[in-house]
Structure formats: C-alpha cells, structure tokens
Length: 414
Image 1 (cartoon, rainbow, N blue to C red):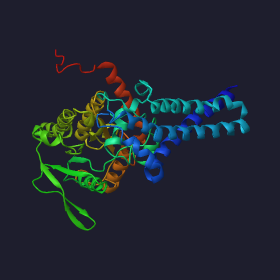
Image 2: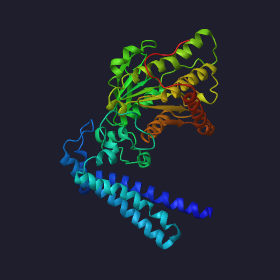
Image 3: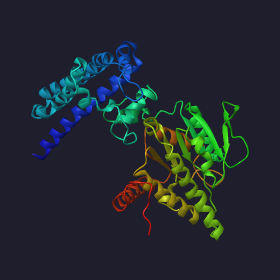
Image 4: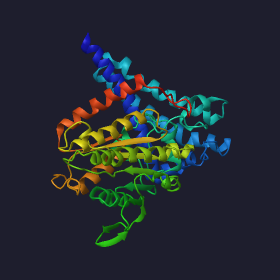
C-alpha cells in the first residue's frame, strides 16, 4: 500500500513538474526561434514598467499569441504523460492526469483573458498585476518582482513562469549585463578578481577603495582603468549619492590583524570588518525606494567561512561572525536581495597561505549568483557546506522568533 501511494505521488508530481519544465523551455524557445518570437513579442508589447497595460486590445492579443499556445504545449505534454501511464502504469493513471488538470488551469484563464472577460486577469495573471512590490524577487517561486525583470531588466533572462528551477539551471536567474556594480576592497586580490569577472559579464563596474590610485585590470593583455572612488572608514555617508545609482553593492573590504589582541586591534577589526559594512549596507538599503529598485538592487556581503570555522585569527573570526549575524538579522526584512559570500582560504594579501586561486573564487561567486544562490559557499572545507546552512537556518529562526519587524523609525530603548 505504501509503495502504491508513493507511486501515485511520484506520477502526480512528475506530471506537474514536467508541465512546468515544458512551459519554461517553450518560453526560452520563444526567445531564440524567430517563428515563435513573432508571436511571443506581443506579450512584451503589453506592459509599461509599472505593469499597467498599453491597451486592452494588445493585452488580449498577447494572450492569444503567447499564453494560449504555451498552455497548449503544457497540455500536450501532460496528455502524452497520461497516455504513457495508461499503457505502462494504469494503476497510477488517476494521478498521472493531474498534469492535464494543471495545464487546463492555465489554458482556460488564458482563453478568458484573450476574450476580454472582465476581472479574469486580476485573478489569474498574478505576476503582471500593477501596484507596489511588497517583497524582493522570490527565491524558489516566481513573483511579480522576479518576472518584472524579464520584461524590463533583461528579456534574455528570468524565463521561468512558476518555479525558478530552469533559470537556476541555465544561469539566467540573475542578469549582470548592463548593471552598475560597486565593489569595496577593490584594490585587494579578490576585489580585482571580482571586478574582472563582472566586467566580463558586461556589467558596469565601480571600484571603491581606500587607496588614492586608479584600479586597473588586465583584460586580454591590455590595461583597463576602472572607475575608481576613494572612500574612508567612518565616511560612508559621502557615498549615498553614488549608491543611489548602483544596482549591486559588493561589500568585500576587510582587515586581518592575525594574532593581535590589543584594544586598538579589537577596535580596528570590528570597525573595518563589521560596522563599516553594516553602515554601508543600511545606506544602500535606504536607496531602495521604487519597484525597479526592489527588483534590481542587491547587496553581496563577504562574511567568510570564519562564521562557522576557525581562521587562526580570533579577532578576524569574531568581527566576521558579528557581521554575519547582523546580515542574517537584516535579511529578515530587507527590501532587496542580500547574498552572503562564505569563502574559504584563498591566496591574498590578508591570507598569503591561502590555497584557492582568487580568480577561481571570483568566477564561482559570479556563477552561483547567476543561478540566484542566496548563500554562496566557495571553499575546500566540506564541513562548511553542512555546518553553515544549519547555523544560518537556526540563527535566522531564532532572530525571527525573538525580534520584531520594524513598524516605524522609532526604536525601543531601555
């Protein structure tokens, strides 16, 4: 009996997930095969950036030319799946037809929208509803901010309709092309490597550094000067005007005092590794105002695997763990996506005995970000892949249970 029900569940889920995969790959094909794109382009003509429709007629045509054929493709797959079940697993046929019902739940509303039946769009076209975005782009399920980016950020990314699996698999869950990305610690080893990888991803890069010199990259054997902004710890507010124009801020600066434990070393470690990053984070989050900001802006924070394992530098570990916990707390209510970078020992000025190549680490960071990994782990230590997600989950639950959402600018004091 147990095996029978497990089979039922497998066939039911399989046909639904299969229909979703067909929908997403149909969408991808619509962008790369011109006969389908001639139909699909009507869908992209429908909406203004605030998700209001250009005209009701174009909206109806968009449904007939894209939504209806897409749902028919889903239904065709589901029928084939059901026929296979009929001949090879008839005991599961009742569950194998769930995909047909699921596909019809998209086909009938698409037809109704194409016919112009009032109010149907408000009930069934959820990812295209106008109004204020209430959250950042979702991680596993497509919401309005996630899909908005397909229309108004990069039409060659963000293809998924309900589940984001295909985008993650293809590396199209985050587009870096054309985005303005600022990197702190840009004069350091990893900072330069990140700038190079982002430049190769066609991003507009800005180097934020404490040094009075222009950051340059070696691109195909030639020196490439990067737009460089000099800033100082404690003077973060001077960057606000710049951050308003930045799409992605990467907080990568840090200091390692190694074995020191003087009061000065303690103060410096916390100020540089934790509090300056926190101030920049809050400054950047204050620039997230519009729907476009909520959909496109992000912060990536290099907190290090020192959050969960020794780094042979107590003050480095303590300050990075403080930053990590602050980021975990801030993630609960952040108006935009915040990614953590959990990096193992790579060779740099801070860690000359590191074993990983900074170029390889930077490449992995960008690759995982494009797959919309929110906690990016790059390390040679297998324990980190187990310990960190557990730690992050438990700390996040603790913070959620014993802290409250901000309801005003006022803070409780004792």
